[in-house]
Length: 177
Image (cartoon, rainbow, N blue to C red; front, side, top):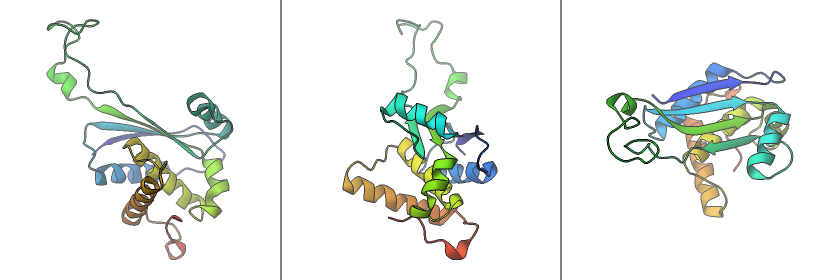
């Protein structure tokens, strides 16, 4: 099973860490992510996500979710720094068993709570949607073009239908397309 690290660095809104940890693992497994992959999920306050939004996307103000994929491949064999020969720094059997980092998903619960009525319906549903959305971004999906957005939203709905059990199941309509 993929490894997911989850941290909650805000205290304004409740975050059911075990619930979201399981949803992240289920979504990654459904997307056929290997057992050697690590993802970190971090819940932060508005100031923190606004700073990340400005620093990495050049946009001002807080947002609901940011994804930071790690696009690095495996380290090259050889010596550091010239990567030539079999010296220190060359991969070993031990290195091959270590996990590789897929990336980070950062979610702001206060923005999620504010957006929930117009997006997924309620706070918990919005957190579920944002988590799956962020993971799909790590896996290379995007929504810049209309066809990409449709494919991403369809996959979000499929993953949520399979793995997310809303607290108020009778009211769950799924994320709005």
